[in-house]
Length: 407
Image 1 (cartoon, rainbow, N blue to C red):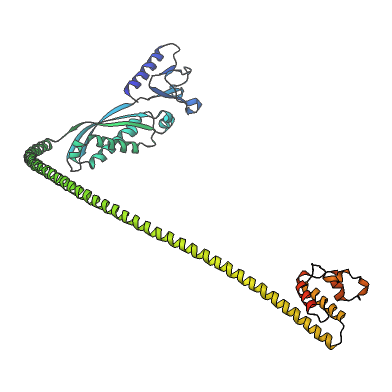
Image 2 (tube, rainbow, N blue to C red):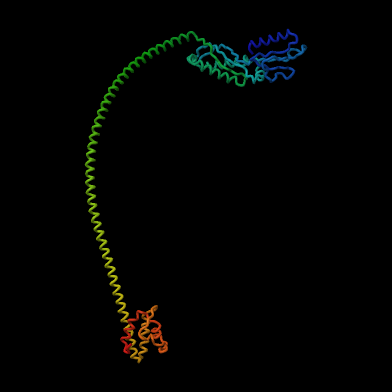
């Protein structure tokens, strides 16, 4: 609890003591409080907001048994501590370090019951000094001068780790002042002077090196410029030579193409003439072939016609000879068997009927006028009067003419 809050509480108590009927407590803005009532279970869990709270207690009740308010400053409080520590090298250090902290409002009941209102002296101060000494023990003297922010963050992390679960929040840690030993300061000054001299010499060397480097760069640029100029001239000459060669090649190519076109035209003309000649010969050959084919067809038709004629004549002669032979054989048989003329004629007409086939009917001589009852019912005579095929006319006439009995 801060000194101002304690003073305010005492002033309020003094005013109440001198006033009639005054029994209460004031919670200042930025503060929180807990009610302690001995007759009602002790510390209450409810966190009291800023304001006036009446504390009723009869005058005959001792103060130790009256309700009271435990006031807590909920704003960040800053505490400055002076440390004497040793660096990593074992050099003495006198430091002034400040820490900002406040209680966790939602955990005031636990803070009041476990630690109490004097939580800084009980917990924060000792843990803060221990964390700072531990961090400086592994921090070098040079790092302390160059890395104040990193060292402050490390002390803050270590303090938060130590206060975890103690219901207290740490805001920041700040190294306000460092008192160095005079011998260390002199050694540091000499070292700084030496470093400055080294830096000056290094800077001079770097300047000289930069001048030399720039001189070399200028020479290099000049050489590169001349080289680029020479390269440009060579490129121009090469391009001009290339154009000349290209023009010459184009002329030669044009001449070659002209000769080639002339030769192609001549070859085409010769080819067309030869093709026309060959086509003429082919047309003549085709015409001759067509004539030969037509002549062969005519000869074939003629030969077929002649052959057919000869076959027909041969068939007719053969048929006549066969009929004559049969008639002669029948005559001889009739003579041998004493067959009458009528019987011979009957057999002759029967043969003629068979020889003529069917489908054609004709009558011969005067026999068509004779009555049917004069002739017996024989196949030969029936055929003579019912019709004889036309192909047997010549044979029947021949048989009649050659018959020993006459017509």
